[in-house]
Length: 67
Image (cartoon, rainbow, N blue to C red; front, side, top):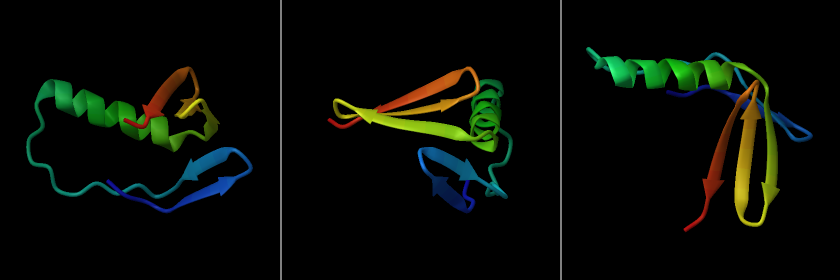
């Protein structure tokens, strides 16, 4: 999965997402991939606090923490 991305202020925008060949994807994995694609197609608001990067897209949120 890849595509060009831009950041304007605190908003991440991903365009023209392409997916490599993945063959038959099991139900759960296919649903997860679809969720990620939908998440990335919306503008993503980014914040960083206390070592955690947070992406918010619509009603969904992802948190990334360093180990």
